[in-house]
Structures are given as structure tokens and as C-alpha cells.
Image (cartoon, rainbow, N blue to C red):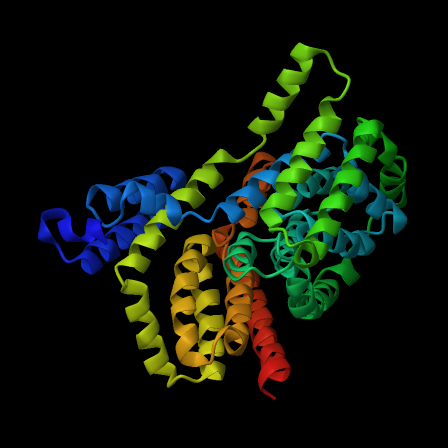
Length: 444
């Protein structure tokens, strides 16, 4: 590569690329700067030092992932305006007759399902405020409900391609379909959800009670009042059903998931603005684009470029060789090592940069370990470890941080150490269960 001939001050490109990555990771971990700023700075330094050219930096960006994220953000952002998610939360509380124990179960299930079909961050943003409303009326401590929703969001989001960013990254890199994730990961997600609900019901649920008059208040809440725009509700359900059907059929349609998501977003924008006056239509479109989390989008773009810098300099290939040497080329040992490494690292730092770094490294290992098909248990281990590791601490996943922020606003702060008492056992049990599942499925 031409850029590598003129490396900054004659430095070793591998050392320089590694230093840029480490400094970026440290800044991300300390949260001294906004994560998008860190990623973009790291990417531009890769270019300025000659490790990448502007063209190769752009080539390193996975635009399928970017398209998928932007498309789903627009679809969910517009759908949210209909009130459909709040409706589901209130309806689930009423269907169990406002029983505190039943609500714990139903909100866990609603959170897990929405996290799988939408994404876990959006889900907790919508479900937690309703949780506070219900627990306030029942005069209950919201803490067990918030804990359950955090864990259910991270576990439920593991089940599908679109539920958690690590899966989006892995799916895009390997060109896996929506159903590949469903077939492989949904069984272990269901097992862990059953374990989680069982433990929470034993420790909290069976002891919960509420006064009849307080239950009556919840039962009087009209869930239909949550629907602010019934026409938009039907339009949203139509587009969501169409997009999810597209994801399921993507391999037969020979389309990338990002293309399907962008088509769904365009269709949602068309239906959302159809028949409105020119000025209002343009304002609605601009409002919809403002729903996109551009901080996350630019974070991904910068991160892809940083990781690509390590890839072109051969750093990731060297690390892959060391990993093969450590596990003696055993797919089974590599699977379990990647599973636990992903979980433990994801407990401490954001799992997105870790997974983004691991993907090209594991890809470079495939020829030495029997090819893509033979390596699939390792890829599933990366997904399970990174997603389940999100339950390891209060800062391990975006959904956790958001719930903690919402709780603080309600004067119900979640203590970091108090959370660890629950989070570490949940993480270790879920990862251990995943390890057994992978062993039975692929190595028994």
C-alpha cells in the first residue's frame, strides 16, 4: 500500500496503529470525550499518519451496518410517535389484573420481545417510563422491575440480527441472515430468560403484593389513551411487518439487510408525510431524520476506519496467529476462549469497539481453522459473549446506562455496586449456560 511507504516519521506502522487503537480505547473507557469525537479523531489520525488513505478509510466502513442502523432508527422513531409501545406495556400489566408478580413477568417478556424485534436501547427508553407509572400507582419499589428490564433487554436483544449492535456487526461482516440468528441464538435466549424470570420470581415476585385500591388505579388506566395517532399505528405495524418479513426473506431476495431497512425507512417516511402540506411535509421529514442517533452513526464510521488501520498493517493477523497458537488450532478451545473473553471485556468496556476489532481478527483465522463453516461456533460465541456480557455491570451496555439515567431522574438512583451484586451472577450464569449450549450443539 502506497500510504505505508510514507509512514509518519518513519514509525513502525503496526506499533503506530496499535497505539492509536489503545489511546482511542482508553478515551472511550474513561468517557473524557464523546465517543463519536474519539472515533473520528482516531480515524483521522490513521489517515494523517499515512496508515490509511482517505480512500482506504472509506473502504473500511461497513455501509451495510450503517444503512441498517439508520433505517431502523427512522422506522422505530416514527413508530414510537403512535404510542404503540406504551400501549403494549400498559396492556401487559392489565392482562395480569395488576398483580405485582404478574407485571414483573409480563414486563420482562415485553422488554425481551421488543429488544429482539427493535433494539434494546429503544425498548428501555419506552418501557421504563411506563414501569415508573405502574409501580408508582401500585406503591411498589421499582428497583426489581428496572433490574429485570435491563437484563431482559440485553438477553432478548441477543436473539436476532437487529436486537443488539454486536449482532448487526457480525451479521453484516459474515452476510448472515435474520433467520440465521433466530435459529442459532433464540433457544439459548429463551433458556436464559426462563432462568432469569424464575430467579426473580423466587426472590422478588412471590413476596410482592399491592393493596386492592392501588390495583384498581392501574386497572382504570386506559391503554388506548396511549395511542396518540391510530392511523400512524397501522402504518407503523404495516412497515415493521414488511421489514421483518424482508429480513427473514433477505437471502432469497438477494438483498442486504441495510437495503431492506433503508427501503422500510423510505416507505415509512412516505406514509408518515403523505397528504400533508408542503411545508409540514418537509418539517416532518427533517424531524424524522433528527431521530437518528448521529452520534452512534459517526462513532461506527470512525471505529470501522480505526479497526481497518489495524487490519491493513497486519496487527490483527498477528493477534490471530497468537490466538491459534494459544488454542493449538482447536475450534472448541477457541470458541470457549472467545465466549468468556468477550463477556469479561464487555463487562468493562463498550462491546461495540471490542466486537468491531475481533471481527477481522477472527476472519483472518478462518483459513487456518477449516474455513467459515468450521469457525461458526466461534462467531456465535463472540455474539453471545458480547451481548450477555452487557449485563456484567452498569456501564457494560447502553441500555443499562439509559435505565440508570431514567431512574436518577425519578429520584430512584441505581447504585453501581448494588447493581453488581445482581449483574455479575446474571452474566456468569448466562455465559456458562451459553457455553454448555454451544458445547451440546457443536461439539458433543
